[in-house]
Image (cartoon, rainbow, N blue to C red; front, side, top):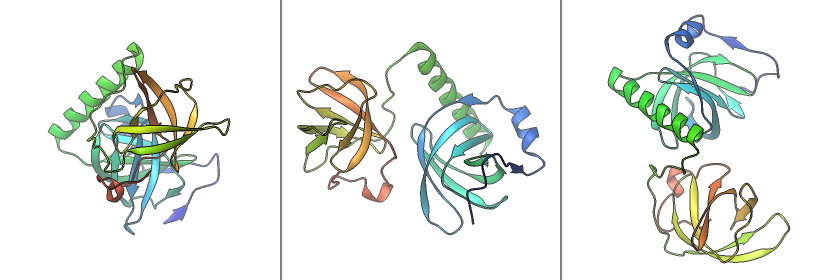
Amino acid sequence: MTELSRPGTATSLPDYAAEQRRHQRVRATLLGRYMLADRREYPCQTVDMSPGGVRLTCAVIGALGERVVLYLEQIGRLEGMIVRHPPRGFAMRINATPRKRDKIASQLMWLANRESLGLPEGRTNERLVPNQPGVTLRLESGRFIAARIIDISMSGVALATATSPPIGTHIMVGSTPGRVVRYFEGGIGAQFMLPISPDRFHEGITL
């Protein structure tokens, strides 16, 4: 494994350009986690994606040709290989059956349409209600407010609260950083800055 390359540098396997030509790439910002060959997990965020590949922003990269297991919100689990080192991350070629690629294409089309039409955030992720739903929010101003978790996914949380900070406001949900992304009657929806690790995602979770 190598640490992040110097800004402005980019290396790649020879067939990556051919993959880019075969599949239309969609700009998509999705949170995720990935595992390299050493079986350690790291957080990431997508830059763009196609049914054949995905470009990620992340802090730790692997070697060209290294196997990657990737989990993305609203997409799910993907496997593939590192094929390029763009600045601030890596690009991965997705290994998938034709049926799986068709499913990814449909998911990307839905995401692109949701973005362009301003549709509300999808709720395709598994959600649960924690055993201890009470939580304290800390606003950017330093103010603390009480809230109750309505439900939670690996990428975000719905909160019942009497206070509605502006959309885009960064908040701390307990000790978990996030930002306000939507309103609903009696509360707010917040997206986590990094997705929750699968081993923490259960009814006993404490944010």
